[in-house]
Length: 447
Image (cartoon, rainbow, N blue to C red; front, side):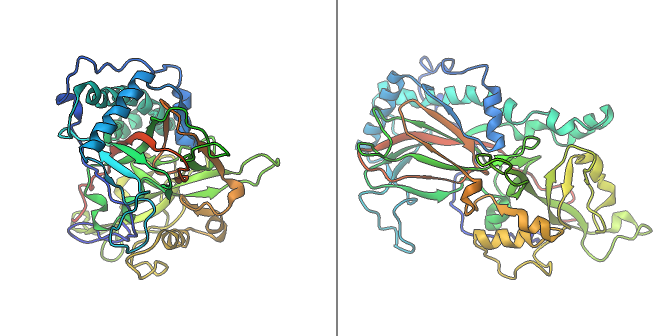
């Protein structure tokens, strides 16, 4: 941990948009199920395209829902608007400290919960239809994004069994955990942001939730919507993507959230993007709390504290899975549990000499503080935060027109994005997040 206490971790934090992170019982128990089938629109041959999400790309599927389903969702939105269920989202067209004074061009949202106003069943049934469809979708999505082989391909048969017992991928199985309607009138926009960040950035609440955002999804509901040109409507989703190196996955690894990238080799051709390696933050490096670990000391009498360390994934003979010359718990067999990790820093915390004394860091300061922990100047110079997009030559900017029935999926952690200004009409969508399990405190924490 970057900061630590005997009760709950005290975390270095900066401003972060709050969200509902607990598991939800959705709508299938409260709406008729006879029409909640979820078979059409699922393509059994798209696993490779799903896996591209973990390499920093956007997944787009046209006609995920039919024209009739789009029409039902539009009518459900209208009846919810008529019943005043929509509220200003507070995420667009806001001035700092403006005391929640919203304008007519603010985006409106309506969280979909089991007790949400039902109104006309002919329209509201479609909420649970979409939920079922997305829930069926997540199984194939999970298998493509979290393949076991990537984690265990360098272990012996015995070690594979031990590893899977300790870090079973069942913990990280995707859940459909948030779902909402969004209506963006003319003039509205959504500034650049990221849907999920590491727990260490969220203050004391960072580690208390059961799940966290993993994959962002959105289904557009606008008919005849064009790009923002002379006769367009605007409202495009703009995503800022980096090219992830071919032998690594971005977003998260064994429950550790990505916090940055290492810039790779320079471009060899004019139109070739630089490759980046994901960098993850391990917040549970077990270290001796008082003094150094003496091999002759009674192991059971030692007190432990968690420290943080940065690492990348290696799948070759150069892997360095252990953290040298530091008082980590030698009995936790780092090299066996994490055979593919190459640690890029020593364990550190808020009391480390190079860590800032401030307890509320903004994103850029947090990234600079992380970079200062890296072993050498080369790593520090190549390190960029997940939200740092200043070097536009290394960024692939993707604009997506909000066309009716289109499904878009992307990493909640690795893809900064924004919504461009709506210039005509109302931009409508149903959106949400697939969650994965958040790490639990290790059994030695607080001992």
